[in-house]
Structure formats: C-alpha cells, structure tokens
Amino acid sequence: MRLITIPQHALRAASRSHLAPSSLASHPALLNRPLKASHPCLGLSQFTRHHSNAFHKSEVRRVSQVLDSSRTEPQPGLAPYKPPETGLLSKLPASWVPYAELIRIDKPAGTYYLFFPCMFSTLMAAPMAMPMANPLTVVGTTLLFFSGAIIMRGAGCTINDLWDRNLDPHVARTRLRPIARGAITPFNALVFTGAQLFAGLAVLLQFPWECFYYATPSLLFVASYPLAKRVTYYPQFVLGLTFSWGAFMGFPALGVDLLHNTAALTAAACLYTSNIAWTVLYDMIYAHMDIKDDAKAGIKSIALKHDAETKQVLSGLAVVQLGLLGAAGYAAGAGPLFFIGSCGGGLLTLGYMIRKVNLKSVKDCWWWFVNGCWITGGVISLGLGADYLVRYLGEENVREESASENETRQKQLA
Image (cartoon, rainbow, N blue to C red; front, side, top):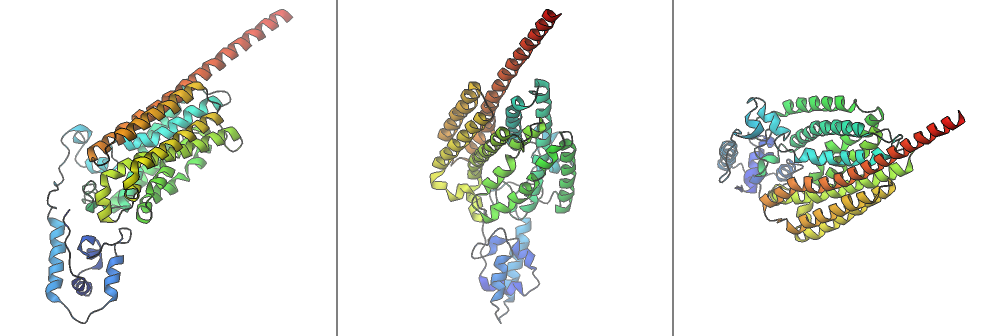
C-alpha cells in the first residue's frame, strides 16, 4: 500500500483553505504521523491548533492534487474490483451482487461459527428438558437456529462494514467491500440492516416467547464489536460475547428455565464462556491475515498485541475452552460419550490445528479458519449428539418398562 507524506505546514495551510476537513480526514496516509483510526478527524484538529500566518498556496494545491488523484488512481500492485464470474454470486442479478457480498453469502464460515454455539446448547439442553425433547423437536429447533444464524450474521457484517467504511479502503483484504468501494451507500446499507433485523425477529418469534428476552441483549454486542477494534487490542473478546450468545438460547428454546434450574444455568454459563474462548482462538488466527494492514490503519487486534507468542496464547485458549466445555457437560449430567467425543475430540483437533497453522501465511490462516470450524465444531457436536441419543433411548426403554409394569399390575388387580 503506497503512503504519501505531506509536510505538516502544508496540512495547516490546507485546513484554512477550500479543502474540507472530511477530505483530509478520509486520507490518514497523508499525515506525517499516524492518526487513530477510530477518530479520523483527531489528527487534523491537532494540526489546526497551531496556526501559521503564512499561506502556502502552492502546497495547498499539492494537497488537493494528492487527494483528487487518490480517489481515482488504483493503488499499485492491487487489482481493481471485478464482478464475480464463478460461484453463487455470478448467478445473481447484478443489482443483488453488492448486497450478497455485504452479507458474505459466498463466505459462510462466519455463519457456521455463529450457529455452532446454538447447536451445542440445543443438544446439551435436550436431555434436561421435562420431558426429554424428542429428536424431531431437536432437529426442528436446530434448523430454526441455522436460519437465524444466516440472517443475523449478515446483519452483523452490514453493521461492521458501516462502522468500518472509512477503515476498509486502507486494508488490502477489505478495500473492495461494497460500502468501501461505493457500490452501496451508507443509507442503503442502514435500510438493509433494518430489513435483516426484522427478518431475524420473524425467526425469533417462532421460538417460545422466553427466547425473545434472552436474545435481545445480544444486539448490544452486535453493535459494539466494530467499536472495540478502535479502543482495545482484544476486540476478539467482544466478538466472543456476540458469537457465543447462542450457547444460552438452546435451553429456553426447549423449555428449560435457566432462572429456576441451577444445573442448566451452570451448564449454559460454562458453555457460553467456553465458546468465548473458542471465538478468541479462531479469530486470533483470522486476525493474522490482516496483521500488517491493521498496524498501518491503526486497527487493534490480539494478533498484533501477542504476535511473538501467538501459539502459546492459542494453546492457553484451547485449554480454557475444553475445560469449560467439560464443566458444562458435568453440570448437565453428560455421559462418557460427551467427554470422549466432544472434549477428547476437541483436544485432538485444536492441538493439531495450533501445531500446523502457519501464522505467516494468509492462505494457511484462511484455510484453518474455514475448516477448523467444521473440524472442531463437528467433533463437539457429534459428542453432544451421541450423548443425547444414548440418554434419549435409555429414557425410552425406562418408559416402556414402566408402562409394561403398570399394565401387568392392572391385569393382576383385575
């Protein structure tokens, strides 16, 4: 990415000329020293405090020329936007493509990461329901959660890109996102966000009414995550608070009252914090793809903060994740299939991923981010599912034996 430096006195002159502050603020690369990405106008205000009597007309023209050219000339070495020619996006009407790109419909990994905590909690809550939830109910609830994950992940991406519309043009991976390249206006994106939230509400209303009260607080985290990247090196923790919320939702969805069931509340809390650790883990790998551009743009991330000891941090997060997952299973009364399949399988898959991932390779980080979702999320789900089915079949046998005994007793009494 090419950075152009303009002397500070030229910027002071420009600030008193016909150049709008917003024009300068949108080009932090013009400044001698970096500006905070969260407040792009802050650097300009620092320059304009120190007034100079000299009016450098030639340098004002020079600043204007740089700003004008930077709007039209592509950055060297970076390809311009090309409409998709393959895949799902290529089959959509041209007017739909920017909106499909905005919700990352062609990159569903984020949807899966949002969905898995919902699936975990549904499978963990099913044996705790009274009576135990049957497989058809579990499958139907899981499908509702998946449809909600598709919608709300898209809404979250739209909100994120609205917040980051002045940052994304300065990061190689995000510079061609629809809002960043001007294919969608911020107003249209805001209207689109509202439509997605209403669609999400329609899905939410298909669940028991208690779910509405459990789900609503998560919107605060959805809206605040993009801000976290500007003020802390740990925005992945805020992302974890957001993406892991589904770890609570499976319980009320199946009629398990968290407020009056201590075991269920303990299981849900442990599962939630376990998923937060998992979110920070996989998003730390994801953040390594942008680590150089993030440093230039002033975006904070855990990958920047702990670049030298990333694998040690990842290992610690994996231990926390699996420890809390085991605690959740213990509180829920899970059997050996859960501990062997979910906890043991998770230990193997996470350990292998942390050992193999090449954090210096964007391609390798992306591969593990996408496939690690299915590998680790899959084995945890299989362990939970196997435990649920064994317990469900066991209860069915108990019910049948009880019914048979009652029938025999009634015959004897007759």
